[in-house]
Structures are given as C-alpha cells and as structure tokens.
Amino acid sequence: MLLWLAHLALAADPVERPEDTWDLSVLYPSLDAWEAEMKATEAAVDGVASCKGQLSSRLRECLDQRFGVHKAVMRLNVYASNASNADTRDADWLSRSQRGEMLYARLDEVGAFYKPEIITLGGDAVEKAIASDKALAPYDYYLRSAVKDGAHILPAREEALLAGGAISRDATIRVRSQLVNAELPWPEVTLSDGTKARLSPANYTAHRGSPVRADRQLVFDQFFGALTKYGGTLAAAIDGAVQGHWYVAKARGYPTSVAAAIDTDHVPQAVYDTLVARTNANLPTLHRYLKLRAKMLGISDLAYSDLYPPLVSGSRTWSIDEAKQLTIDATRVLGAEYTAESEKGLRARWTDVYPREGKVSGAYMDGAAYDVHPFMLLNYTGDYEAVSTLAHEWGHAMHSVLSRKAQPYSKADYATFTAEIASTTNEALLLDHMLKTTRNEDDRLFYLGNALEGLRTTYFRQALFAEFELAMHTAVEQGQPLTREWLDAKFLEITRRYYGHDAGVTRVPDSIGSEWSYIPHFYYNFYVYQYATSISAGSLFADDILAKKKGAVDRYLGLLSAGGSDDPVVLLQRAGVDMTSAAPYDAIASRMERIMDEFEGILAKKDKKKKK
Ligand SMILES: [Zn+2]
Image (cartoon, rainbow, N blue to C red; front, side):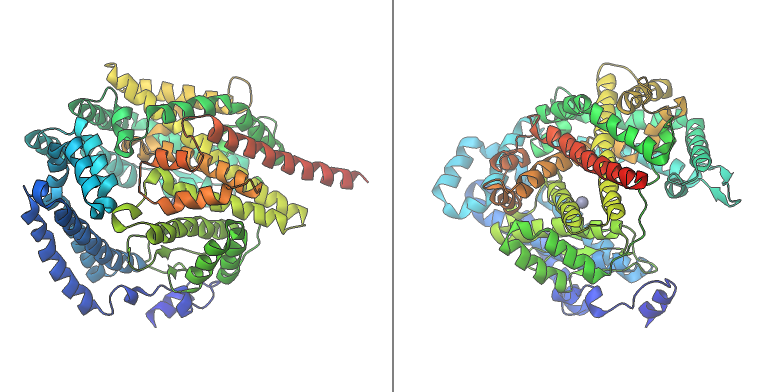
C-alpha cells in the first residue's frame, strides 16, 4: 500500500506490477531464514581460522572452506543490501546491510593468512599440488595469482603496518567529500527564465546542458569559479592521496604508482600507455565531432560550456516491456542461448524497475548470488537513456549468467577491466538495432547523436582523465608536490590539447583548469582508464559481431563465459582482442567516424529535401 501511495507522487508513472519488482525470497524464504543463515555463517567465518598454518597439508580442504564461506557471505549480502537499496529510509534493512558488510570484512581479516601461506609454499609446490590433485582445478588461477603477487607482498608485520595506515591515507578523499558535498558555499545564480538555482554539483549537472547558451556559460563560470576559490585545500587533498598511492607502491617494490595499481589485475603497463598514445592519435575524430556539435547548436565559436546540450533532442518514450523486448531483439545476433537466457531473465522477477521515494538513484546489476541469479536495480523513466541503461545493465547480468554457468564459484567473479565490455557491447548492439528498425530521419539523428555523446564522455573524456591521473602520479614520483598552480596548469594543458583549443575547435577558458577538483575518481587510484579500455574493446567486439565475422560471436561469448578464470588481459587475448595493440582504440575511433558519416549523410539528405 505504501508503495502504491509513493507512486502517486510520480504522476506519469505506470502502476507498479509484481513483475516490475524483484523477488528476493528466492534467496531466503523469510527474514527468519536470513537471520538463521547469518548466525550459522558468522560461526563459519570464525571457523576459517582453523586453517591457519594448515595450507601445506590441507590445501584443498581449506580452499573449499574459504570459498564455501565466501559464497555464503555474498548471498547474505545480496539479500540485505538490495532490500536496503530499495528503501534506504528503512533503518532495519540498513542495519542488516551493515551487518552483512561487517561479516564480509571479518572474513577478509580472518582469512588474511591464505595468500602469505600460499606464497610461502612457493610456485613449485603449488604447481605440483595442482598437477597431482584434479580437485584443485577450480583454484588453480587463485593459487597461481597468489604466487605471482608474492613478489610484492611484504612480511606479515609490514603488511599489517601498511594496512593500518590506510585509514589515515583515506582521510584525503573524506576531506574532499566533506568540502565539496557539504561545506563549500555554492553560489546561487539566476537563470534567464528568472528561476534561481544553487549550483551544487547535482544542480551543475542538471543545468550544464541548458538549451540557453547564456545560462550554461553562467553555470560553468560560477561552478568552476567556486571550486577555484578552494583550489588550495582541494590540491592539498589530492596531493595527499597521490603521495599515499606512491608510498604504498614504493613499499611494495613497484617502480611507479601506475604499475602497482594496475598490477592488482595483472594488467601490463603497455595497455595504459597504448590507450593514451592511440587516443592522442585519434583526436582528429573528437575534433570532427566537436565541429559537428557547433554546427548542430548553430554556433561558430564552440566553447567548453557547449558540450552538454544534446546534439539532437528526442521525446519518445518506451514502456518497460517494450524496452525489454528491444534488448532481446538487439542482442539476438548473439545467438539462441543468449536470447533464451535473456527472455527467461527479463521476464522473471530479477529487476526492481521504477523510481520510488527512498530508493537509491542510478542503476546497477548485482551478480554476487552465485547459486541464484543476478538482480538488477533500475530507475526506469521510459526515455531512450533509460532503454539504453537497461541494455547496458542486461549486458552485465548476462555476463554473470554465462560465467556462473561455465565456471566454479572461485572463477565466476570477473574483473572490472572486463565487466564494462559486456555492457558497452550491448549498447552498441542496441544502437544498431534502433537504426535498422527506424525510418524516421529525425529519430535516426537522435540515436546517432546520443551515441556520439556517449563516445565522447566514455572514451575521450575518460582517456583524458587517465592521462591526467598518470601525469599527477609521475610528478609526485619525481618529487614535484601537487600545488593548485601545477594541477590547474596541467589539467588545462591536456584539456586544451584534447578539445583543440589552439586549433580553434573549442575554446577552453582558464577556469576549466580547476575541473580536476570536481572529479572524485582521481582518488580511486587508476580506476577511470578502464572505462576507456572497456568501451574500446566493446566497440571492436560489436563491429566484428555486426559484420558477421566468422567466430566473432563465439569469441565474445567465450570471454563472458570465462568470467574470472584468468587475468583479464589474457582472457581478452584469447578472445582475439589485444589490449596492448592499437586495434581496440582505433576501432572505437572509426566507429565514431562511421556514426558521423551516417549523421552527416542524413543531414545532407534533409538539406536537399528542403531546397527542393
Ligand atoms: Zn556498467
């Protein structure tokens, strides 16, 4: 009843049917059952300690125990965290969700001896054990990874010292968050229609795409102007974070911060370097897009504040059932198994569809309940963005479905590096499907424009961030502290290069130098580059699949089914994509070129019609 009342507030929303909500009772039939399993698992987590010092004699048994308990903890968490996300106002669910997280942290702590003990066993003993006991096969990658990581793992006491310092190193992001999200006095602006807006980060995002040019200029000037005033504090915070990354990298014997960060997934440095180099080589593609944008907006002097209004606006909406059907139809090229699984999963109660008061914002897929199925949370509004988000999250869900089917628990969970490939490939397939089934020229322009904007923000913008993040760390490694002057100048230099400031493509004013302080990801230690690498690999897969290249679908589904059974770059190599080569980055650039060719072709046709 409460749900229904909350729904009335959202006038345009359809009535919520049971099939538009997820059914968490497949995890536990009742709250009592969850509580009982929680108690049993708490005891099991403590029981993991009994394997301490035992790995050389009871390796398989102890791995069975660790992964068995891990799986149980994850399932408990899926239940509590998703119920809490569906209504964040519910204090009981929040506390259950926190209990789940604490149990996970406890398992981490109790089981911390596994890796050091495996490293002590050594590579030879591990290989011998794998060769002599077939039942160790589910753990071979875990064991070999631990041995590989051994070169950078310190003796137990030193590891404990490093871990203990994390809470003070992490203070840097808390300082940034406190200032930006709570204490910074954002300016109030009066927009051209007379409305007043306080330019918090949320309102900046809401207004930066305004169709009125003077409004978006005002929003940019005032928002980045406000950040600039606190540039000294924000520079001190990011300097602390980057120094912290470098401190840990050095302690572990890495030559650079980037080498340490990307080695957690055994990604070679060549991937990072190739991404940066090829993106720079591909900048003419970005410039062509920016010129097209200027033309569509009807302006001759494109500025950085003109980047966010849509290239073409559209107002069409789709019901959730239509959106699900579009996802099924768009991914039909992936074969009968993918389609059958999609039809099953999208029609079952795996997804919480609509926005509601108290529900978390955004969208995600949670694939951590290995023996059950993925769950998806959407805030479906019916516009094309929402349809595209469904296709994106469904890509993640199918990645989990296929890897769970093919892999044991210990190898099913995949790295972030491969995760966004499944989602961005689906977005590309959706675009292709929309274009193939749409005759109306304005609608086609809308889909193409939307895709171009996505490529700008997910590929070029994230690669720019990756380059800046690397520059910050390199400076610190060379003894250069990160002052606001250095940060502003470096960010401005890279941004002007990307957006073609000197060539007159986009005017990037000095104030944009402070945009680095708006991006929380720079505290995440080399995370953003994976957005750019993933969408590039996804582009290459989508190209091959749509061109019906022999074996392309099998290679792609093979990657999804491989889950986390090897290093992500190795899995991609096996699927025919070399992330250290130019191919994926050039594929995304030529994809963008083709979309622009098609876009301009339609424009030319429309022009001709007008003249007739
Ligand atoms: Zn995603």
